[in-house]
Image (cartoon, rainbow, N blue to C red):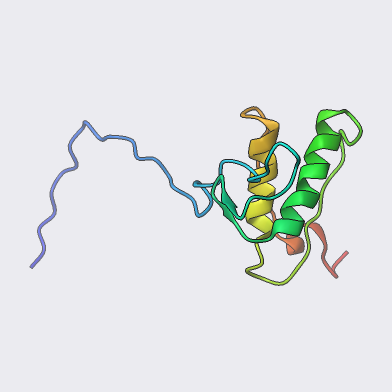
Length: 108
């Protein structure tokens, strides 16, 4: 039979690790071309280069205050690219993951 013990008062905090914590950026070179494996990103070279253009537009103030919607089938790297865009823009840029059903619903 299991025993019940009191939890010690000195409980350490734990760090939450998500699925995309290894991503540090879009993995682009100085010419905004995607490197095959870089900054935690693998594949999706064309999408990463397109996201690089978005990052550049935001940094130049041409796309501020807008929303970016990434669409596609499950498992194609949408969240990874969104995390990479956030990391490219700096530590003060929050990343908030939402699903499409949170934005659009057939109910009124």
